[in-house]
Length: 177
Image (cartoon, rainbow, N blue to C red):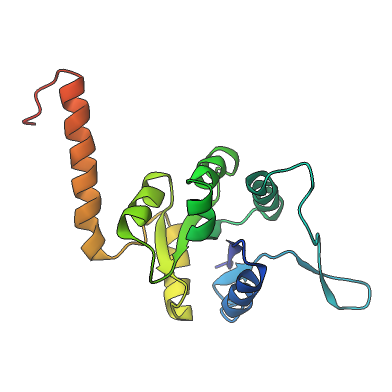
């Protein structure tokens, strides 16, 4: 089995580098794609140190993801919240083969997680998760599964049923179905 190509998107470059180094410990299942390349002296250096001047933050990151072509992308919820989930929508439109897992912290509100899932994220993980959890989540999402805790499935179903009920009423159909 080939390792799954994974990339990390985080506005905080140090945090992104830390997570990339952390994930590289699971070389059997995960192949971490990064902006680091070896120069002629064998030292690692950034492919590009700063964003292109004529691009927005979202456009720059979409270009990066298109260049790296990961199967699974771990995205900080800070990027998503700052862009009002436009980053997820742009990823869905421009990077069809990339599956997104949101990276949350202990302060991320559940309704914000649900919004991210509604905009196309396949699941979420806490930044503090251990390597085994990251590995399991990446493998599951790559297989097409969602990565959400069971306790949240009830809320997701309630949201789907509520939206479905509202659409049924709008269309003039029998909502009792």
